[in-house]
Image 1: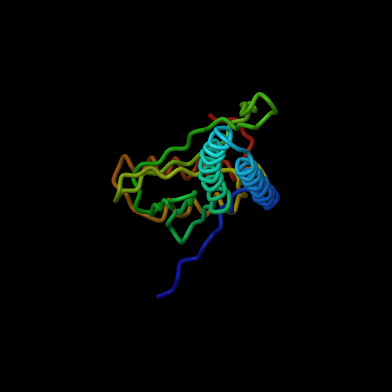
Image 2 (image 1 turned 90 degrees about the horizontal axis):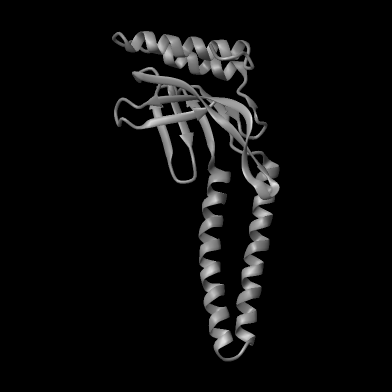
Length: 197
């Protein structure tokens, strides 16, 4: 049996972001070790307090860094034949697009980190494909943007998604909904910056 053709939709954040995050993690872990070492050279109650603070901050930081790094390093999305797979830190959600019945294309606000303000909306909307897996009922979402370049997915990848959706047969009204979503993907492939109708 032949393996289905794999179309890599995106591979998560850029290599630069991944390297910067890894280096930052090493610096944070080093600072935690320095704090723990300072706690050992102090005497009396100050040593106990500093040791407890270092332990709490250390555990919290290691867990938080582990989650962030896992998400940065594992994030990806691909299409195996007709099956959409979206991988995050701890899960990989899959959905057979040819068998799915419920589809939507909505938009999410793009956000950017700006100094002390934190995460702020840029004013740009990113189209997102959401599909409900018919077997599990779980929603699988895919932002139609490459996280590494922050540009729309290339036309060939959007066409591959549309073709996978149209590969299956569905009863009405699901067939019409699938056709509409496939047409919207093809429209985005033709002009990704066109206004939504």
